[in-house]
Length: 401
Picture 1 (cartoon, rainbow, N blue to C red):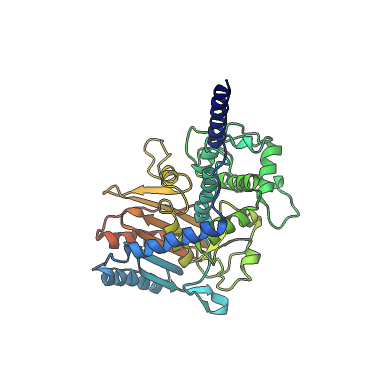
Picture 2: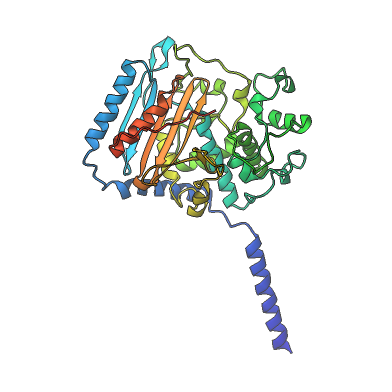
């Protein structure tokens, strides 16, 4: 009898351990160990592809430089650019002014407001928490915000812009606190809860690019992590990767930093700030070329995120017929004639226009950061990829909200 009791006792312990193991969150790696591991993998990325000798590197660099000189002569570009191919930086340059009134020139360390390219950072933050089992992507947002009136909107629908929510940038201004210089993400949320503004469409039925989605995702990061959105992103993305010049902050805070820039109109007059500058997640990240190139390398499989997570993030969720633009989970997707994906995002906010484009198949990366309102940023990206691919096919690159 004792042997039988011992057998059942061991069996119970084994089953209990298995159940607990299946339902518990994975034990996270110590932060310092994780940071060391991530930065080691990024360094190994450099060494892995260093042997890729680019026979036409000089020709490519000359072609890109000629393009920039032409656009600068025509006064069509003011900003910084980095181009990498096969894991090698083949060209980087700073062109124009950080602050024209002070005759302060841009340099390679100059920092820019990323505008909607910030959405790639917010998506990464959300996916990190998803991997740590804080939530499932198909969870309703209202599970974590019970008074949220749009009950059927999921986290994934916020990420891929299929939520149908109204755009907070277009809410009637009388809904917002009139005594605030900057609105907050909480202000946006409170208006949605208290005013019950009608949705644009039923969630999941169509795609519509919408900044509200990412303002709410920043709140989700805060709710489940217990940290402010800027703090979480700083510790779990920027510091982890080694992005030393990247921050989420208000313009007033940014203007005290070294290597700051100012958003400019086409006539070089400075943009002012407005109340929407206080909302993070859809924008609000400041960074430079070097840091964004590190971010590019961290978006390869099993560096910051698992390969399976990246595959989910980089697949298309836009199913409407005759729609050209494709969107994943915080990243746009473009497929060329050879079916090689370009994973990218563009940005446009208060004089800043930005482009972050990466093609994993040949380790290409094109980063253009401009602090003057000019559409040339997107044509530069197109022409750089044409130079890399040695073709002259014309492709349109869209703007961003």
